[in-house]
Structure formats: C-alpha cells, structure tokens
Length: 410
Image (spheres, rainbow, N blue to C red):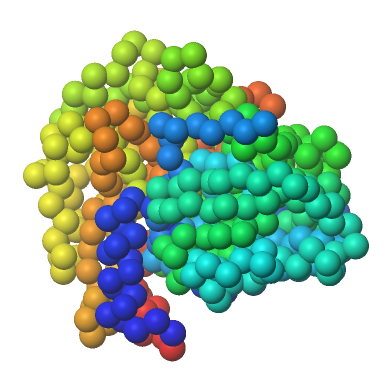
C-alpha cells in the first residue's frame, strides 16, 4: 500500500504533467453470453497521466459478455489481457489516443521495467520474432521496443496473430505506475509500422460483428464497474440514442483515420459563452481515454479559471457552474461531479483539483474528465465516434464520506 503522503505527491505530479495511468492490480470479471454479437471486459481505472503527443506523428516503415476496467481516483482506466500460447497476463491502459500495444520484455533492465510483468517469448509456442525496433513517445516518457507477433486475447476473444511491442527500455517515470503497458485502440494509420490494431484484427477474423468498441468509465473512485465493450455496447449502460460524430482531420492534410478527432464548435461555462476562435468547421478535439483531464487551449482556460475556483478542501462544490461542450449540433453538459478530481491528502482527508488544464494554444483533448460523463462508442469502419447518456443508475455520485471510506482501506 502506498503511503498517503507518497500517493498524494505522485498524483499531483501526474496531474501537473497532464497524463494519467494506473496503479492497481486488475482482475478479470467475465460474464458468458454466447448469443451476443459483442464481448466486453471489465476495466480498472486510476488517475495517472498517459498522454500521447498529438502534434508529433511518427510513421515507421471463453466468449465473454463483460470484463472489468478499474479506476484509481477516476484518472486512468486499464484492463487485463493475455499474450501467447501460455496465456501470459498483463495489465494495460486502454488508450484511444494511441494504436500500438506494448508490454515489458524479459530483457528489459531499465528502471521503468521494475515491478512489472515481463513477456517471455521463449515460453510461447506461437510467438514470431522480428528484428524491427521502434520508439514510442508519450507525454510522460518514451519506450524502446522490438516488434513481435503472437496471439493476444481480451474479454475471452483471441486474435491469433497480433503485432505488439516488447519493451527493451522504459523511462523511469513508469517505474511505480502499477500497470505493465499500453493497449492502443486508435487506427492502424497511427501505429508505428501501421500495424493493424487488435480491434481491427478481431473484426477481420469475425470475432466481433463490427470494428467497433465502447467505453463506460465509471465516476466511482477505485471502482471496478467500468467496461470495455467489443462490438455493440450493452443497452443496460446507456439510455436514449447514440449521438454520432464523423471524424475530422487533426490538422490540414492529415488523414481522418488517425486519432478519434471530432469537431468542437462551442464551450460555455454556466451561461457564459467563451471565445474558442474555432472555424466554421469546428476545432479538432481528440477523444482520448489515455489522457486524464479535459485539455483546452490556454486562452480558453484563462477565460474561466477565475470563475471555476475549486477549493482544496472540497467545500462549496455545489456552487460550481456546469460546463457545456458543443460538438456539431449536440451540446454535452459536464457538471462538477465529473470535472473535479479528488485526491487523498493528510489524515485521509480529500483534496480537490480541477480536472481541466491546458497544454498549448490550440489543443483540445476530450480526456477522462469528459468521457466519464457519457458512454463513448468508437466505430473504426465508419470513422465516427458516438456519445450516449448514461443509464440513470450509473450517474449516482459518491459522497465525501464514501470517498474517505475508500481511501482508508488497507
């Protein structure tokens, strides 16, 4: 168990860097439903910052109904998956902002590999080696890896030949992260080597009915009720219709099938409409489950940072305004229950932080702060992202007392 002081320092550092990761031991919870055309896996989430560098793009040449995702103070969402004929198990951040899968290899000796599960190629009879090496750069550090091919399974579904990275060196920032690697979910065009993603391969092999997945990211601290749905999402997790948004290019002359990028047309805080300087076609906003916060341009943040004053002692949260984000013709509300991040302080008292920040003068990233408020659906074939209102039983918020109880557990 990480001490309260050390945990507080780590979380603050992660929030300042604008990236989110994981620090828990996930377990798989599977519900068998052979009649379903989709599969889902439980996720675990913890606040951690794992933000992929959007401005730089590097192009080098058991069927289960549900499985859980876990969360640590509602910042990073990750799951378990298996590699190889001997089913070596790993945990990884489920990242819609990247497209490569990687885990530490058995020859990794750097600080970032300490305490992590390491892949042993010699133990898998289905492993295929490669002499290709590559580097992945994240907002929090870099990973040097060699390319391999093996069977990879998640939610009981097995892709027989999936390309993935076997890390040879990992930056020390990842040392105490608590997760093993990254499970990229964006388009193959974003992947180094343009390796088809697991979802794309699963659809091609007809393991799922369509190249589509959905995320329910629980707003419950340290909860294990989040879900990754492979194929169609479970109707019990949302209400009404899914509101679809076609993908746009992240910048002129860039491919559309790269990041999950949608058009943002407006931003309001309470009744105040802020100046976004978005063109008629909208500002590109990346839907990224690997970024813990809602990222806005610096000029936009400056307009409302004095109107949204989150008190460290978490008092008067009910007086904070609702935020409204306009995506095409749809407006999405974001209440303080979702955009305020609570982290442990001294004597099991919670400290509150604003889950919104800025990286530069132009980036919009719809990270976990936003994604917790909706069910999000990612359709790779039709190049679109959809959002749906959460089922009423999923919108209940924890009280301060409940949060204090959770963090006091051994």
